Image (tube, rainbow, N blue to C red; front, side, top):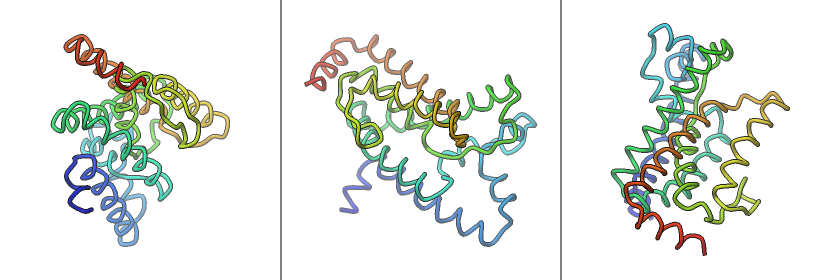
Length: 213
């Protein structure tokens, strides 16, 4: 079972996220919370001041709590493993990091432009996961999925519901959801999907037809 999990990059990324969460908890018990969060979480104010640039990466592997971690890792397990098989291991790994970094960059840019959330800290793999979802929305738009693990709908609709549904929820309930980061990942996923469709029209058309059954 262990060999099967670590045979994929998706499995390794999930394992790293789990270990990072445990390390994060250990650090919180040995250092001040403010110090740990400022060193590892992405904060637009710090980035714009030229500080803690590495948090574009470290924030991708940290989560705000157990539920945040579990929800993201379950999503990654299903979406990530599928994308990895679809586009290949190396291409998947590169795209995962590009999507995650793009999510963080848009989060910082929007904060800078609007002047809001400038001091907010962001963590989580959801920006990269939205990138994977955006890619699937283009390559396999009719693929049936379960939104919030219960509501069945095609992939293209699922990404729209998740994007705008979470945005509406955060506005209505005041929840700290990284909507602009999600949007950054989604845009990159859509863009890469259309790029692959243009470069490999026959293969992508065949994939789309196969997963629309």
